[in-house]
Image (cartoon, rainbow, N blue to C red; front, top):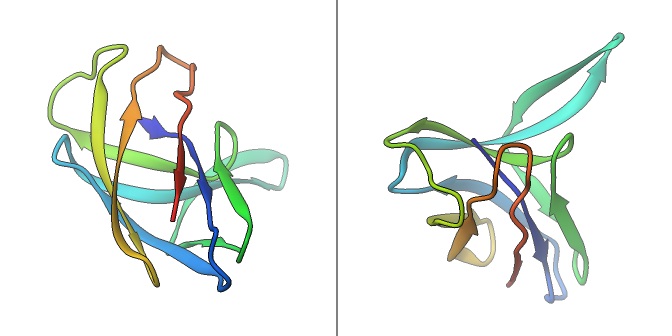
Length: 111
């Protein structure tokens, strides 16, 4: 499953998402999508940078959370607890709303 949300950084310093976890799956990886030759490919990255006073949108065909090893099938409209780990802000608990297939759930988190 993929996780989508918008992260806003109201601080005066840039911050980075350096990891994420959920009790609903074995692990969460940070992924980006980019063109390699003529093929769109997804790849894992170590962090997402959130500029000071800026935002970053995790969205389909862009940066996103890749939820791996799901322990049971998610149900539409279910809320999945996720902990985001930031380099500066530390751990921040959020919830992702489960959408339908190819329907990103919307949400926003500010730190």
